[in-house]
Picture (cartoon, rainbow, N blue to C red):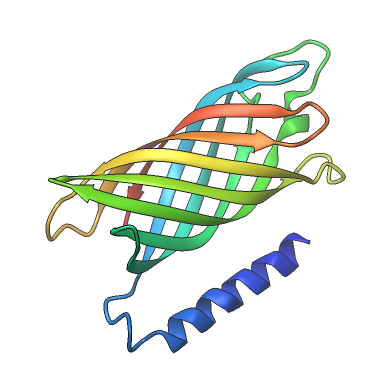
Length: 179
């Protein structure tokens, strides 16, 4: 399922970028590596976790409500209970590889930028391959605008809704760079 979604999404994005060259002359790709740290609230267990990932986004300029719309793909490793040490439970059981199409909307105000994003992801179990579940990612964040600078930092508040039998919700901060 994840592989077919990956090929379909990137094929569609490539087609849009090729056929829209005349209408969007300043199209750009962005790479956004990030680290994730936060608190997980689950049905049976709660605790601190971490993750690391990368987003590849394509800028569609100002096509919706005056801000820039970015479409892309996120691939992340997420360990919602990675900092916890439970006696009877293996926290590694809940380690996931996330593959998710992402939509981001950025707004600029003075020398600051604000971003809102969401995506539906495939949370693939790493230690237990049968634990592939769906999930929903939302984020809201801030980044400074440096004129002429190719690399900018950003910070976002992120929510991962993991729809497994424990119905986990990880609320976290993302720290990363945008280039």
